[in-house]
Image (tube, rainbow, N blue to C red; front, side, top):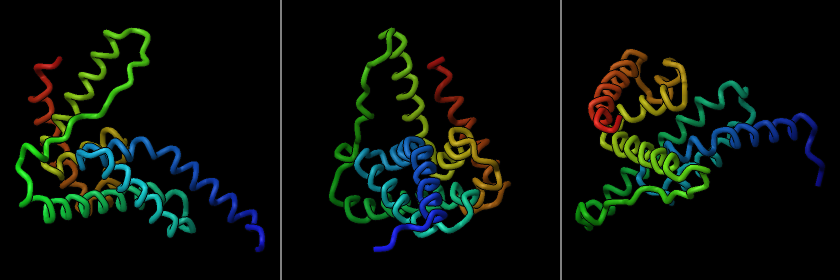
Length: 179
């Protein structure tokens, strides 16, 4: 079995570093969209696996490719879930609890407030229409530029701005009472 060439090995290490840097954010993005930790883990793992097919592409293209793949995977899982489970379960059965939190902060009161704030944000994000949630998450939380977000979402930059504006307005209304 021949050893991997030096450039190929360096490319694999770079892709591993890319995955390490995006893994946690991708999981949060998927979990908010899917409302299931297990489905989110599957979606992220599948997106990373599919990214291996693009490892020869320039590294600067990886973020757009990865987020596009992950977004498509999330939509596929949502559609499959709606098709297979939508008619078999009541709305109460589909209710998913939020993530379990480990309290490792030195100040339990501050940690509680942070968890509560995060839970409020997640709840507010989940209430948004899918396109608004995606625009907000990609532009604000992931800090992607407008052009990249538009490519990931498969729409124009103007549509991204519209979705983002509507999402910010809706979130502001929902989160005003929490401030």
